[in-house]
Length: 167
Image 1 (cartoon, rainbow, N blue to C red):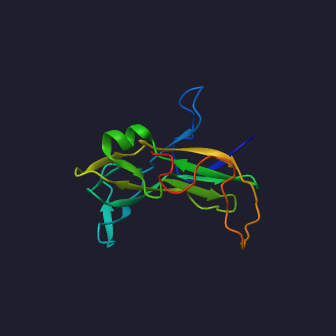
Image 2 (image 1 turned 90 degrees about the vertical axis):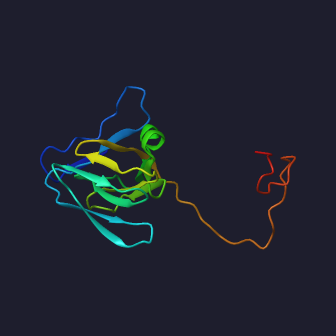
């Protein structure tokens, strides 16, 4: 399977797999030539963060829209899913705002990465930092319909309610 991409600006790091065993490719922040980053504070007020020397500081508990410099040419019947980088989340408290981003095949604009600084410390993001990981996923089209019959226990041995596994 081939996922093509278009580079919007010079010196964009291409999506690459870090190792031969990697399930996802890495995406990098592209802040070179970018002057501002749009962000939101804890009260959902729009904030403008200035990019200085190809880097931006994201204040604690702020959400920011980060450029990737890439437009994906996603094949019909597929989507690209963006996921958190576990090290970035654990060590810095930085994660994707929506936990998993879905990019549909008909989206043909720059891939913007929505991140959130969940820590009490400012997060310093530099140009070319790895910010998330992505994968090409085959979409399954299904029908969704209402039923008048409540779902029953299908021999699972439990009632299927929240917390029913004891976890």
